[in-house]
View 1 (spheres, one colour):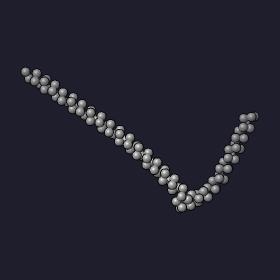
View 2 (cartoon, rainbow, N blue to C red):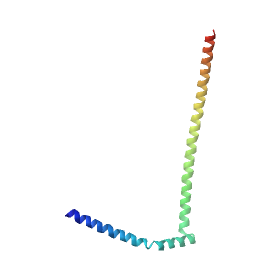
View 3 (tube, rainbow, N blue to C red):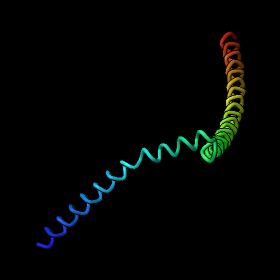
View 4 (cartoon, rainbow, N blue to C red):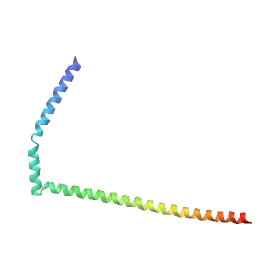
Length: 105
């Protein structure tokens, strides 16, 4: 029987909470009007947006630097691998010449 009472109490609580939230949503347009007036005056909201945009710019700048660093390391590694590949090709060409020279004798 206790579980039934708890269930009913929970249901009543959630119902009242939902009604309260719904009633508060009716007051929302007043806040929107206040926000519009703030934007029109160029006060706090604009400063907040400028601050947020400057922070986003800083984050993007740092990410760009990181990407450039990774790209530079990758380019260096690729150049090193290409040099090693060229050296292996040269060695292979020498071995083929020696084999062709030995086969011709």
